[in-house]
Image (cartoon, rainbow, N blue to C red; front, side):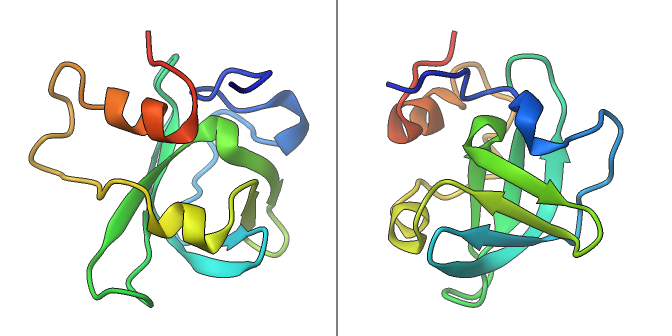
Length: 116
């Protein structure tokens, strides 16, 4: 279980509300994993959707905002505290199911914190 809320940006990340992160590269602890396709600032549900198409064409995964360690606006990179393998093992992001009640719960379980 994390010491922080997995669904909100950590104060230390440098995230500023309203920032447009779409197109930023995402860096896992062991290398680049893809680019941000969309992000959400929803209260208690903030997250990134990352296109990891370099591995599997068209595959997207959801990363809760709490996995972000640092946002480098100058380099347009977001650093997360997960490895490539951890992200590869994440459930796929499903646009058709997004917004359904309980949809985010699978990601909360995978990343280690229940979604309330």
